[in-house]
Image (cartoon, rainbow, N blue to C red; front, side, top):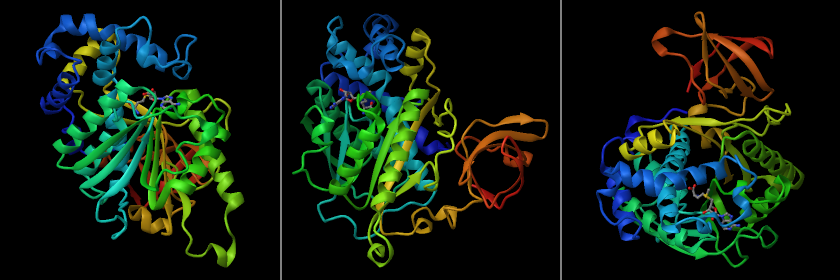
Length: 426
Ligand SMILES: C[S@@+](CC[C@H](N)C(=O)[O-])C[C@H]1O[C@@H](n2cnc3c(N)ncnc32)[C@H](O)[C@@H]1O
């Protein structure tokens, strides 16, 4: 996924972002001194063991899964240091992932329509917010490449752990104001139970509905989650609003998101009003990453999955933490889905793509490897996934994961195709 340097600069390697994190951690009582982050001894003793515990849990390396327990209150842990570990090591990557998704919408030309927001600003909700990685990622994305969100807005953060929620309220206010945005954060200490719906029926309609690394912690099967998402967006997502889901890149969790997409499409197709009744009505449109409502190319195979990757400059302290833990967060993989509730035509929503959906539009869904003068990669499009080679121009560089080929002419079998011509790579 291509992201501009101006976005990565908002996170590191300079000190400004780490200083903001430090100030917030000091105010929350998670650090006692601004020098702590520079101390290898402090990081190794107080932070690293918790990063290791959380990393094992999130990567499902033991029997436990994150949905089994409120891990913020892990009995054997010092909960303040565990919160600090999440805040320093997991929040920034997740925040950058969400900022990258926002940037993808920006680079493809998505803008909210004029007059969409009331005088008082926008309304948004983040589910399973923890320290508000998703909302603060949108603050970085919007400050860097605006989609037209007003500078004033109100975020509702929903989270089952009170201390994590308080941290999220504070972080979102301080980070968004550092980006020149007056965004207010209001926490709701609540455990989401799918049988009751994602939001209480009396909740208002929102312009933005997001979750980051949350759905994978729910126990219910993907079709139940899709049913609850669809019902919630039907009732609580404004016309021309967006829903953004960011999830892990792990095979099982990524496939779950693909299944959720498939179940959502099925529901919408079954319930879509036909003919004149449908004209001018807002409908749900998958915007990213799939560029259409076709059957998922990755789900076609039992062991396949689909994920993106974004790259950044880690803040300096995170580089140190990576050295101590053996983790490597230079590249940040993730899965995602962006849905719009809209009256607009696809070409108006993502104008950089021209007329889409189109059988000649493809997205790169793997890294590309050099094969002589060719680049080889997997593409996904209206007719599913295919392996392809492309003779690229040296000056332009190899196409990369996330790039989109427009008006591409492919010849050959799906396992060995060649891109013979294309009009543009975006
Ligand atoms: C992996 S964390 C992600 C936090 C944040 N969104 C991020 O991207 O860094 C998942 C969060 O969802 C919360 N959570 C899990 N199940 C929940 C539920 N049923 N209701 C409310 N919050 C829940 C957890 O407490 C945790 O804070």
